[in-house]
Image 1 (cartoon, one colour):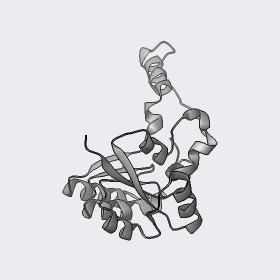
Image 2 (cartoon, rainbow, N blue to C red):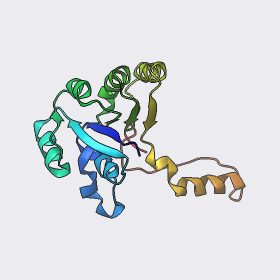
Image 3 (cartoon, rainbow, N blue to C red):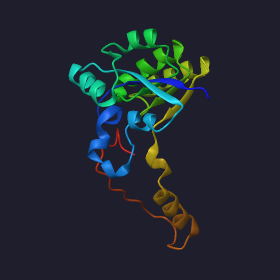
Image 4 (cartoon, one colour):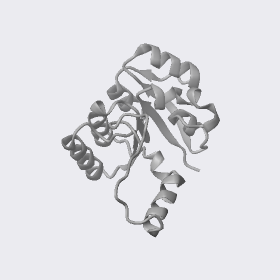
Length: 174
């Protein structure tokens, strides 16, 4: 069975540490999820912050740690890259990975910091035949399907307004 070489760019919360906040969720961070698959081999990580790189390396037993994601992509022969940076940096990273041999990219939400950046990402992904997935994990929460079914049924009457409370920021939420 083929295995795929994976690296993570952005070794903060989703890139390494969120499991410590929510241990009952089971594997939730990107590296923890990689470790549950016998087809994914987590081989490297990149972050601008040295302390994050060191903590990631120790926690996940990874020695290939890079400050510069460009160098990591060039050296590590990666099949999959996960981009868990802030949205302002995501487009540049995704475009570079797509144009330099990475065949699958998983990116956290939000997709990008502007429509122009999103368009550049889509263009690079399509032009290079890259498989792409954006982290929209809450989109699959069964509560949303149940809510939609109740609204669609008309049982409560016509929808007149919708109020949502979320503790996350609009830019990075849901």
